[in-house]
Amino acid sequence: MASAGQKVVLITGCSSGIGLGIAVMLARDKQQRYYVIATMRDLKRQDKLVCAAGDTYGKTLTVCTLDVCSNESVRQCVDSVKDRHIDILINNAGVGLVGPVEGLSLDDMMKVFETNFFGAVRMIKEVMPDMKKRRSGHIIVISSVMGLQGVAFNDVYAASKFAIEGFCESLAVQLLKFNVTMSMIEPGPVHTEFEMKMYDDVSKKEYPNTDPETMHHFRTCYLPTSVNIFQGLGQTPEDIAKVTKKVIESPRPPFRSLTNPLYTPIVALKYADDSGDLSLHTFYHMLYNLGGVMHVSVRIMKVLSFSCMRRRAVSPD
Ligand SMILES: NC(=O)c1ccc[n+]([C@@H]2O[C@H](COP(=O)([O-])OP(=O)(O)OC[C@H]3O[C@@H](n4cnc5c(N)ncnc54)[C@H](OP(=O)(O)O)[C@@H]3O)[C@@H](O)[C@H]2O)c1
Image 1 (cartoon, rainbow, N blue to C red):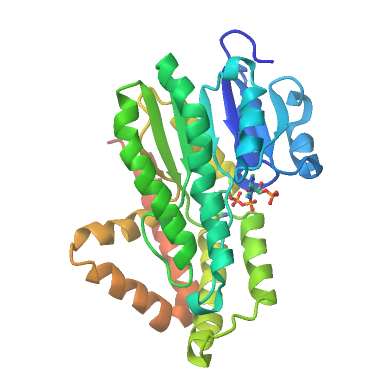
Image 2 (image 1 turned 30 degrees about the horizontal axis):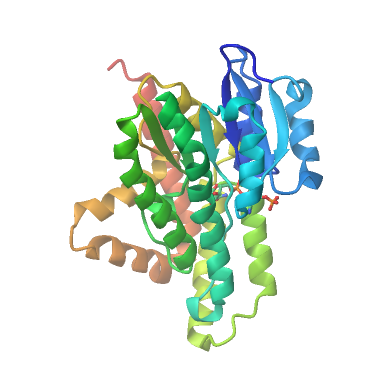
């Protein structure tokens, strides 16, 4: 149970990746400011978390079952928390889906929305009323850079993240009146099981009803580009956990945090041209014309931004 003065943090999807990383980082806080309820839909998958939590397990970290797609599971878990008092809710659970739209089933698309959008909404609906009553709380959503900028062959995943962005952007205004803060964390690529599940899924799926030309673009332009981008720009779950902890500890938490500075210019393109053509044609060029040299471009972008950041860090200004 949380001790006096500790903040109770409930995180969804902690069996792997970013959720696990955030849970462990907060549980290991030197000043023990957090009591982490790390949740997952299947407790059989808890070993990795328990091992990473080490001696914080049972002290500043506990594990609880929670499936964001089930009203009952969400209610049971929140009811099991003392006085239903949750100071910080971190909506992290999520699933991906890539492929040509005509080759994906509507059932698969709905599962993505059921988890990424309705899963987070279900959690917020359960926890927010108590936060409003107490006039205090922080709701965090692990969104994505794809919640701000669509990416070819990620149509449905991006749509689910756009949906949660729109939902939270609207709700955040009202919540301010109740002293409840909302923050979106927007990672680019991160090396987690998410990436492996995506490639595994692609190798098994057949994408029926998709014309050969589209399949060719998907397999020979999109997939190699995606691999290069993950290899060149991918962050670690710890990187995302650090940004999230910084947001939690900020005296005035920002509404948006892009975790990867390399994506800032990509998102800025969208706002630089209100016709939308600039980002549309840039992405077209990147996918269909630069695909083959993408690994070189990614390396150049990395070196440039690294030296830029270093220069900023050593600058006396
Ligand atoms: N990795 C990236 O490149 C990336 C980039 C931007 C944003 N994100 C976002 O980051 C979040 C975490 O993803 P990750 O990269 O850490 O991937 P991950 O390692 O696959 O973790 C996803 C977590 O969500 C859980 N989950 C899925 N459906 C659930 C449900 N119905 N109820 C409860 N938990 C459920 C998974 O549990 P199981 O073990 O039971 O499947 C797993 O613990 C997601 O919202 C994702 O969209 C990821």
